Length: 141
Image (cartoon, rainbow, N blue to C red; front, top):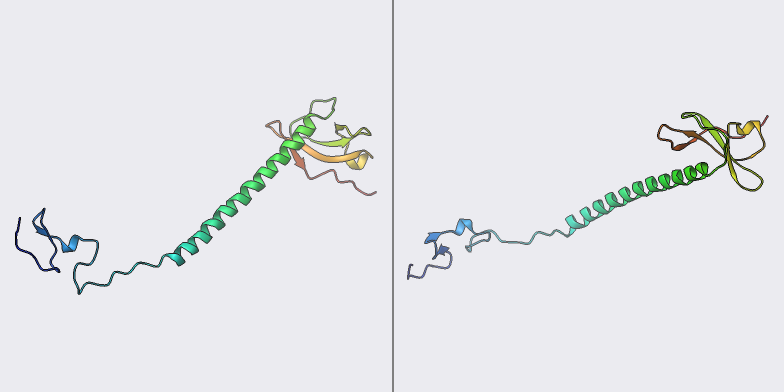
């Protein structure tokens, strides 16, 4: 160990017996560049806005997918609970109606061919799930 005192601008590590000014994460001399804290407020605010927008967009997408799935669940539940006396064929379109007692029933008769209380048209897919079909709107003759 060196017993002589070094000047303040000299950085000497007594333990390793080496000069290590270049290894320090801070300025060690009077002529060194000024250390200033980086202003990160603007960067943080900009990125907080971006992240919040991304999260909100993903939330809206997930909520829309959830709402669509719940709607599909509800009408599948309604159709499977409806009365019908035939075995539906995959890929075919069927029409859901309500009788006078407000009970649902499934039919092959199109809405423009009858005067039943029309609920909607549905197609059975290969997964045995009912999908809404864009047919069956009442046509004026």
